Amino acid sequence: MPQSLSQQALLNDEWRRLQLRKETQLKTSASVPIKRCLPILKVSLFLTALNFLVALFLPTNAWASSEECESSCVVDSTFLSNHFNPSEPGIIEGQAIRGLSAPIARHSVSDQTTLLSEQSNPSSALESPEVLIAAPQNLNPGLYVPLFDAEEFNENPIDLDNSGLPREEPLEGAEDDTSNSGLFNYLSDFSASDLDLDYQQNFDNFGGFEYGLQPTLNFENSRGDRIGLTTGVEIFDQATTLQVTNVPLEVSWHHKIGQSSIDVSAGIDFFDRLSMAPRLSAGGSTPIFKGVTLSGVIEYGPYKFNAQTLENEIRALRLGPNLFWQIAPNTTLFSLMRVGTYNDGNTEQQSFSRLEQRIGPFGVAANLFNWVYRDNKEMSSGYFSPQDFLVYSGEIFWADTLFNALDCRASASLGRQRLGGSWTSGYSYGGQCSLPITKDIVLDVDYAFSNVRDQMTGGSAFNSNALTSKLRIDF
Image (cartoon, rainbow, N blue to C red; front, side, top):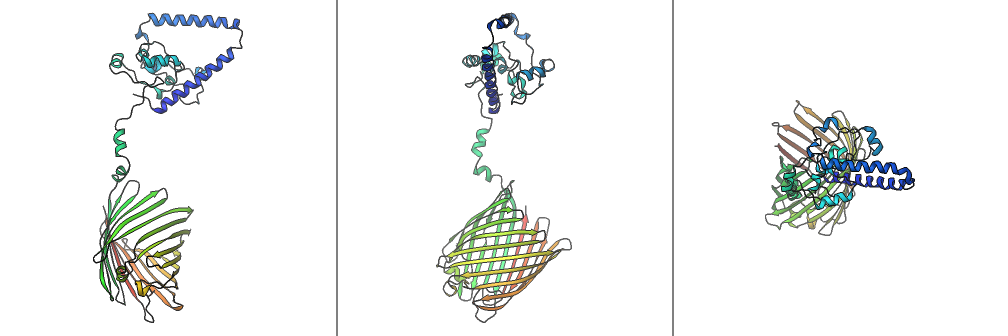
């Protein structure tokens, strides 16, 4: 089994430390008188001759195998403490010596000449009787290399690198992992998670009507990322303009990065009697303080205000930040700001803030909304573009679960609205219920009524009704 790069690094580091110790010992011994070294030299020469005779006449099978050595060849802790630092990588104090018969253990990692000779003749590593007990691969079982049979080695020699160690080989299947990595590997992790079927119907007392049915198929991966595919049909009808039918086609992507997220979508809107139009949006959110989340959005596409606006092919670019603050467990503040520019030369500014306090199943809220355009383009372009529009209101709401299955919410607000310097009352009410049909199918129904203006009506009252529903199917 070839060694990993980390194991080779440990060996190289250990070799450098051994070389450094060797050089230090040589420098230290140079200052010792030669006469005091003569007995040591005689003993060294005797041991060298004895090792040579043993290596020459002793049978090779006299060496202990790795299995026999498990119980008897134990490194003494005193030996380790005197020769190595147990805290250094690759050294484990008191470990059994293993792999004495392994090729990698039959040469000294501190002998560079031996390494070079074995590189030129790899089989010498198998035939040499030299065993270095202090080699780091003997002290650390993680550096052990299994025994190779000599005959098998001759048929399939080991490919050694420049340091005399077995060359690192790519793991089996690594090439396939590389070819399958990237975008394809990321997308293959997605599976269908749920289907959302959105229905909406809006109408007012001035002949405006909008109807839409949009299914969205959502996919999710193991990381929590989501991909959505949306299509459907939308119909815009108006008393003064021919009906316009829109078929959207959109792809969206939601990606999580820790506690932050990124949302991107792109699509095309097809119309029955108008030219198609691209639609793009991007956004993200991230916590900036404890309980405070900052998000933002930028979007471009056809302005689907009514049939006249679509017929005039009005395009809008809007962007701005959102801020959510969890002030207390039952107290929240939400604010947003938007700036926009239109292809007819108009610009806008929007701001909205909502302070909410929950009290059990009940709650109260204060809302403030401001909307200002540079020019009033309602007559020429068709969309509501006030140069001075302000709404503030107080709201009460209730939200609870009925019959242990039906989640419902009801709300009502009352306030004032200012349009062109003229003040009138503004109010709204509505309700929403979520009904689980089965374990995996949930139906949401929402109705809202409001007299808050979204068009110039002169002295006439303005009323709008909105009915929306969503059918959610989990897979």
